[in-house]
Length: 246
Image 1 (tube, helix red, strand yellow):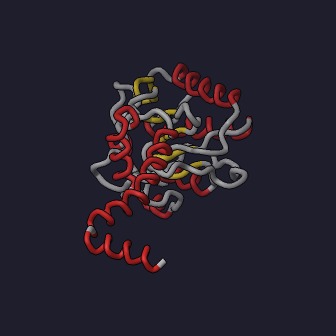
Image 2 (cartoon, rainbow, N blue to C red; image 1 turned 60 degrees about the vertical axis):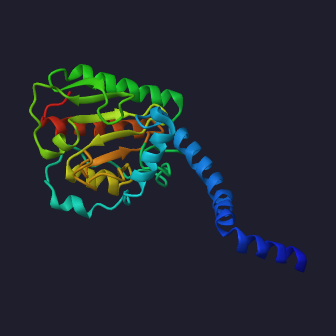
């Protein structure tokens, strides 16, 4: 035993850098592999398309993320509302991924039928409001369709400009959705457990995410589907400045 310890001490003394790198590799490589696989498990995104480089960007951005459920900052914004106060969401909030980009829900996922119904709701409101919104490639996600303000409508406020004029989009992997709401509506849906802020929302002027950029959790049943639809309609109204969303 003493002989083995002596050999280890000699090795450390003679090759300290090699030993140090070996320890770092033994600890770090499994973590790196696990973290990269967790990143890929969040589904297709603009960053996942570029593989390991996208993961490094996500890792860097995550370091700047902040908590996602405080709402005091919304009290300083406009008091205008487009959303009728919903009931409180049942149960705990879903978990979201370790990485803040892409921002995804990882549990409490909807059944296929509810997911299809949510897709149909998006299509219904786009078709019913052709002068307010249209569908194009999401300016934020760059891999999924997004609902944007119609080109004929000027951006009605700074949130629309910061948010690249995108109203909402659905994430196919989990059927959560990102939307932008008014500050007053944002406070309501976060406080009642229906949504959380994006970790990078409002962090920096260099990132096009206003602090009202929210992840709305995927609906699990008919009642929750109705609430999520009302949130989508409120987002369309706020982002277009309209009080007559169909």
